[in-house]
Each structure stands twice: as C-alpha cells, then as structure tokens.
Image 1: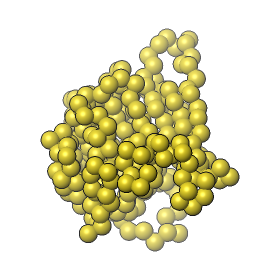
Image 2: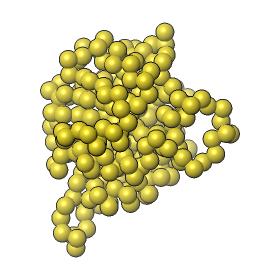
Image 3: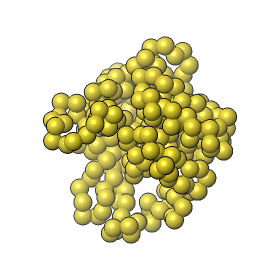
Length: 247
C-alpha cells in the first residue's frame, strides 16, 4: 500500500488517481478563513489530505468533503476513519453539481484544489487513464460550476480558498466577480526564484456593496518553494512545518 505519513496522520493513496502533491499540501496549509470556521467543505477530496489538514488546524470544526470517484471516495473515508479526528470528518460520494443542488446547509469555509487543465486541451498527448483524466481535467467541474456552487453553499460572511494555475487566474476572478465573490489575498507561487509563476492561491469573500463601489484591491504576495532541488525556502518550511515530518 502507498502511504504518506505526516506528523499527526497517515494517508493511504494507492486507490487514488491523483496522488498527494505540493498543490494540495500548499492549499491545506495556506488557506485561512477570515472568521473562525465551525463548518468546512473540501470540494474534490481525492485522498482526503486537505480535509485532514484542516481538521488538524481547526479543532472545533466539522469538516465535510465531496469526492466523485468511487475508489477515491472509499479511500478518503478510510483515511478519515483512521485519523485522530474521524468523528469530525465525513466524505460524500457525489459530484459537486449534485451536492450543491441537493444540500441545504451553508458552510463557513470552503476549499478546493479543483481539476484545472482546460477541458478543451488535447489530452491524447499524455497517456492518462480515465480516472486520472477526471481528476486532472476540468470537464467534470468547470470553473463556472465550481464558483456557482460556492456561491450557493458559502455563508455570506464565509471564506473560499482555492489553488489554480496562474495563467487562468484572470478568467477565474472574472467569473467569481459575477457572483460578487472577490479576492482578499492572492499568493502567486514559484517553484524557484528564477522559474515562472506556476500557481495562484486565492482567498475570497463575498462583497455585496452597491454596484458603484469597487471592492478593495487584494493583498498580492509571492511565494518561492525551493532555492534548489529539495532545498526549501524558510517561508515554505514555516508554512508546512506542522505537517511534513522533515520540516
């Protein structure tokens, strides 16, 4: 069995198409609600690692997750049950579209590491199976539907955090603005100092003021992960030190 051991929990990932990676751990460690959350939702749980990180960080919160793939759902559920916070974690087996149409609850804090490769891009260039394609490409959850679902499920004073490709940031923010969801903080991530910006971490909240009022500009920062291969920056180490064993 493929296991990934963190300081306070262990994640099995042998049945998940998308394994634990830097994006998920970044989001789990970086995402911070504006207000103290009592209800949290992780959209697209995969292994369940983000939900587990949030359960570790917010000990008063009930953490729900959604996962479409049957094997990943089963594995996330098992990972939740084996964790120290199993009584506060639950994974729904459903598409996000089904979930937001049926659920009546609203959440204080919603996070997502969504499938973000453009569904119109050519996939035949990569030999990936159907499960991995579903986990990586946005056919199953386009940004428009993700944001609409967040609009329906997020408390009016709640916070939404996600990680997306930097080159799709403008389009994502354009869609979100239509639903009065605006960024409060943006952290743009580089692998190394000399590499291009690869990811955008977004902290977003509703802004329902008059049409004439322009929301305040977000705080925009940069984060660099490594100086060199496996030589991590102090900023990154401080962010993930409560999770990774060797940080």
